[in-house]
Length: 166
Picture 1: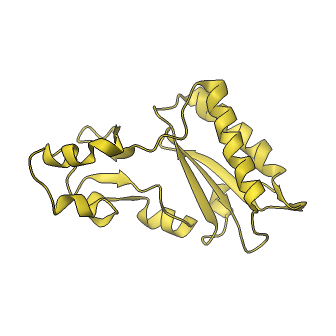
Picture 2: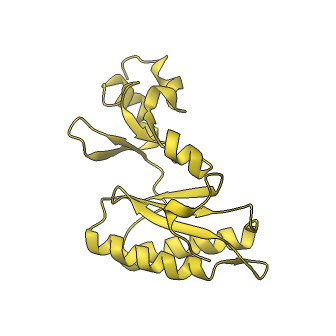
């Protein structure tokens, strides 16, 4: 059962999918409608899941499920991944992008490939104060408070202690 993202419980489990590029307004509209239709019928072992999904920053698809009502199963989680992959395939968008997204000095969202993190730190592209999107948050509450966070307060903090020329 689909409900608006603003109404889903703060302890709901979230999954964040990052597009490999900025989405257009039309793409956001299509993704939003597709998510609503898919999530409205989402089930685990025949029981409806209370869920929501929304596009943020024209770049991130966030899916949430209220585990207080019903726990998602492995199969239902796989189904949601397949939806995202199908949407991406039909729109030529890679939602399985695992690069680091950050907000640059120009207030635009940029990415750094994971293998290039050390270099980005050495070249001051990423600093402890750089705002990043931590897609590893687990709940809506964490998403609200820690999704946009300073790199130095995230899992990237380990890279700043070893800053040297690369």
